[in-house]
Image (tube, rainbow, N blue to C red; front, top):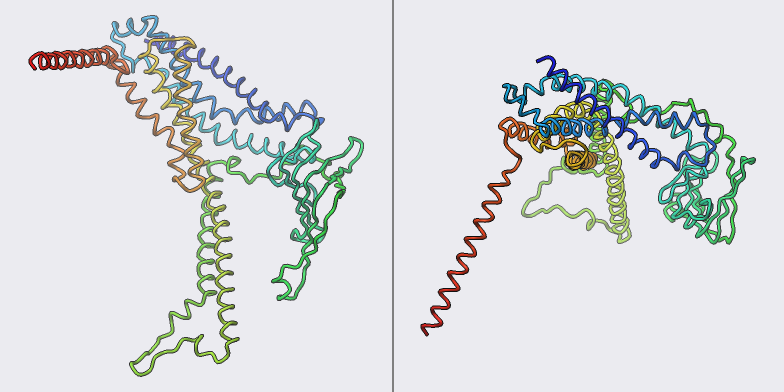
Length: 491
């Protein structure tokens, strides 16, 4: 029996390692293709490029490992069934569960190792890769200007609609928010139809040439009445040049690792502490804002006033009791402004709380995913092994197709659940465990079918039912046609 366990374990390990290496290589190529824009054309040392790839390798494990287990189990057990090795085992009184015993122990240890890997190695690689990417991006700010979003370059925030040209040096529909030295806010906005980036390798000055645009500058005043009018200066230009000093930006230390505030960079204990602190801060801020808003509206004071109306003496409306018409207008104007102010404050706070809630959900999802990935290895093994014994096909043909279909379902369910949970549509723990919860009934069903030596679907019975259905319908049609013919002849 030990020889049998060793034979099954060795067969599975050979197939698993081969599949794992091939899939890792494929996903490495996909990673290089995805981030080639961050590596190419930036005069990076080859060591930095290999560091970039090395730091991204651990993050591929949550994708590659479940697929490798699923595909290897289908291939190995499909090959056993195809070569009638399972038939020989069953004739010797060895059941499917007995044949899977050594692999169950191996998968259990592998799932534990996966948890420790997800809890220690992946946060480390996420931390290293993010800081390295940030330093690479700072090396050439001119190439970091991404279309369709705001990009921080020096003391400016730049957004462009499109880049074109042989070196992407031409820009279309440029919006710039510029912050002057010593100011905490952006009071200058520049809008241009087109632009061009000019620079040279031996110069630390990057020229941004704008064409056909407008220059808006907010005028700061302490007069409240003038401030309500939103005073600003506006000027048009046909050509406007901005010089950006890159000397400080290009002085990049690739060993700088000052950023460590992502949910994927934390271990289980750090995630628990972060979730507790973020939850407490969120609830305190929510309660404080609720009480502060109630005080500002004055509803709390109004609710404490007791009106004593009698039949002969009615309380009068405060606005109607005012003598001057102008006083009534001032009171109404004050009330409208108060309502608009509270409305704007509520909308702003709603967006802020939504962002903080989304951030909290990311931490909770990251916590549950560390446990879900290890349990998914066990579930996908119990999906693949019995399924391979049922389909009785080894190799890379049908097993590869079935494994890809199942894994794509598993993967996209996970993406859907994660995105929905971040927006508050699902509970974070449900989103993290949803793919595994869906695959668990399949594993139970396939294991029961393979143990009872049954197929996934009884094709003979289904085909026989279809044939009988067609025969009955054809007989009814002939009988109805014969009756219509007799009626016509009798009339």
